[in-house]
Image (cartoon, rainbow, N blue to C red; front, side, top):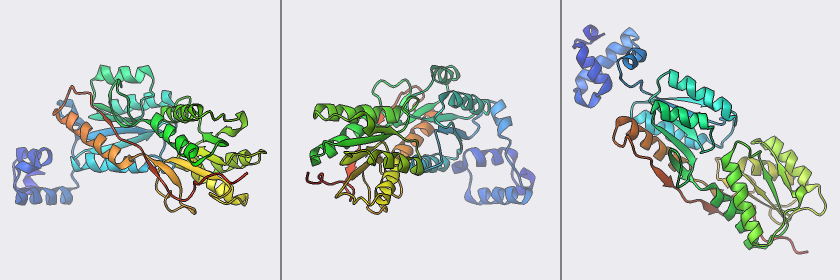
Length: 331
């Protein structure tokens, strides 16, 4: 390949690994030779000689909906700008599967790992520590996290979401959450919401707190079941915008006016929430900023700029007032 480009093998290597040190004309000649010959770099050989593989693993619970889409995109944009390829895997909210995926990514000698949240098996944390691999937890913030973390306090998101409904005058509040067993984001939001309700002296009847997975269809059915109860709540607090989208569809199906008859609020401010009819009031978690900063930190750690630093960055959540919440209807 070096012969086809008319340069030395060391110049080719430098063009791949440190392009800023190679003249533009030379880089152009090498790129042309790469295209003509269909040349593919042997990353495995580089790894055997102690060099980086140029890949970063990102393990997320799901890519089936909008929950992590903006975060994945901004994280990917940053690491790819620095010459890394991102390898994405999903575990379906199964932490044992997450551990097995991590092992496979490490077998491929990825240079760094991004994982969602701080709820992981102890074996997962141990493996990251044993392999001394740069890693970052994305989406959640805790001041005493075991590894670097960049995100928001989901407890705050739950508290402020419930508090918004309370300040509007709602006391008959229902809640729809996913299973919280292996989902620290949902668990923290539920604790926050319950804390705000308890502080205001608001009790949620047992039948008014129901479960739905991250699915518009399942959330729609869960909300229809909830609204079939008499008396019904005047507001529904949803663990995320996906569930809130389902709740809006259910209320419309039942002929309820939003927000005159029922208020609905979500958490996240996912793509599409502003375009709903009516537009969804929600608690914004800045996914793009979180993903971008996480990518920047991980790349810097891999490069050795901050090899031993545990970075913790907290983003504030923000209430986004739109058209699905209002004071409760007059009795």
